[in-house]
Length: 97
Image (cartoon, rainbow, N blue to C red; front, side, top):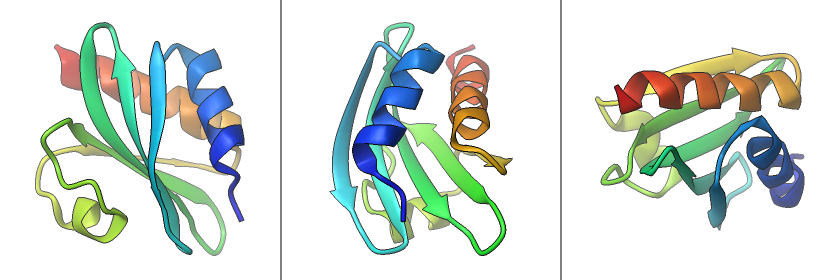
């Protein structure tokens, strides 16, 4: 199971300026993330074989299940938490543009 504080620390070290835990569910943790003056909703999910995340603009739903159904946003997949968080920040750069 993912630790919200561990994910938060990795996101901050990857370049986020602020990370707030919004909800913690058995299958995922959702966060509000601030990067380069913009805010995003991020859901971090533990899959069977890898980790994945969805990042969307701040007005997207805050619950993990609803975030997956949100048509806007980008996905990140990784085998490591560090790689996942670096990918989330990379996608935030794309969404910011």
